[in-house]
Length: 231
Image 1 (cartoon, helix red, strand yellow):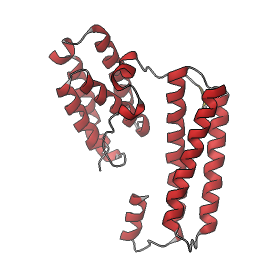
Image 2 (cartoon, rainbow, N blue to C red; image 1 turned 135 degrees about the vertical axis):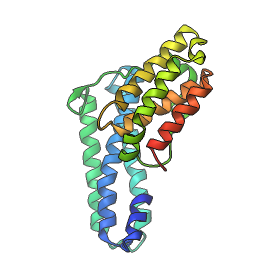
Image 3 (tube, rainbow, N blue to C red; image 1 turned 45 degrees about the vertical axis):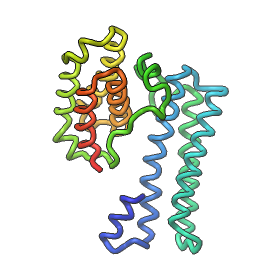
Image 4 (cartoon, rainbow, N blue to C red; image 1 turned 180 degrees about the horizontal axis):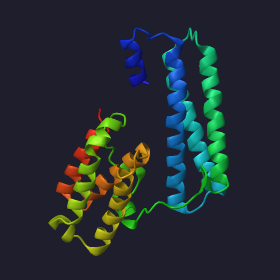
């Protein structure tokens, strides 16, 4: 929202309806990525997509919609001259969430069957919760920055996998780090990558590297990712 507002300010259109239309459009993208992340996390953790697990993801998703709409309503203020757009935004958010949850309840994500990401034990052991995962970068994904830096990311991961730090690890730590590293490398080699997936798994890789004592790898990989997700 801040990025949209900043661009609108540069164009002298801070109070135009276009700002709220962009909140709607970008919000759908953010919401879909966030709900999918929640579903994937829940499925990775439990292997379930119905019953109590579904109810928890459903509750989480509805809270996402509420929090996003609270932010948009706060920006609109009491006068809310674009109330119709804001109202339609909530409807669009709720319809998207319902569709995603229906897929999840039936074991689907998009056009594919749900499957577990290769979350290995070292992730759970070292981070213990999603709140323990370090966020890489504070800005949006930059396609230009990715084009410039994606090979450096692959090279940094390859260097980490052959480093003395890696060789000094216990076998289960090596396996855990390697599994996550391969996910990040695979995503980095896609054109274009899934930005949300790259950031999520890149964050996990950095955090795990730090926790198991691969300080050089953690710093180097985090630096490259920060350039890709330029603030």
